[in-house]
Structure formats: C-alpha cells, structure tokens
Length: 94
Picture (cartoon, rainbow, N blue to C red):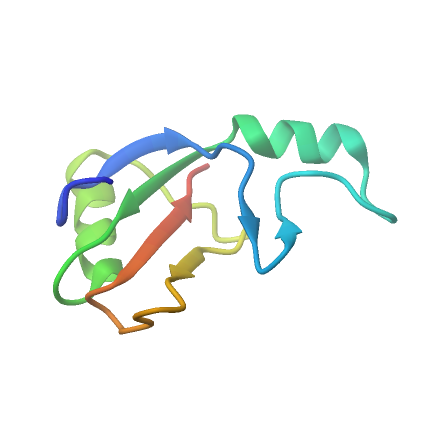
C-alpha cells in the first residue's frame, strides 16, 4: 500500500473497478487511445484531509499541470468508503 499523505507520480496499471477495466478497450473504444492512456502520468495521494488540496499544492510546487480535459479518478474501498481519509485520488497530468 502507498504511504498516506505522500504524493506519487506514476503511470496507471490496468485497473479493474466494479468489474470494469478502465484501462482496457471494449466496444466503441479506440484501442490506440486506450493503450496511450496507460502511458499517461498521474499524481496520486491518499491523505487525511482534502486530497485535491494536497495534489494541487504538489503540482504548483513542482511546476506541473493537471490535464483539465481528463477525469480525476477516486477509488473507494467498499468496506470503508470514507471521504476523504480512505480514498485514493489520481489526477492526470498534461
């Protein structure tokens, strides 16, 4: 598991959420775009307090920009879907 409150810069592996793989192709998706998405970079954090505040501070401090044309991903655990303490947040970068 990732350290709480530590922002990480990463590429997303294939993620299966609620039975749907968000980084694999299915009907209507362009395979090339899906494969390219797997190589895009994200910043990730799981923290006490507002994770978006933590991530946006990290972006400013490191002169990075989020991709405002892409969706952030919030991953909640079914056993404990508590905002914000138990949520993994991923923000895509430009």
